Length: 58
Image (tube, rainbow, N blue to C red):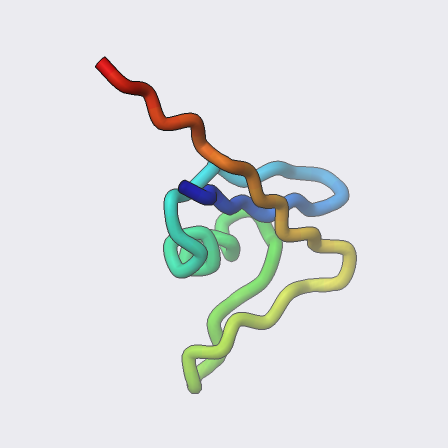
């Protein structure tokens, strides 16, 4: 499963299991915002980081 977070020059966001959640919470760290049409707009210097979450078996 891919996880997403936004990184600004000064802050790092939490990891989220889907891109929409990461985008919706990006404003809290100053990474970007959702405009009135629902399109995500990044602020300058913001980077989207992705990683693969390890799936553990029992």
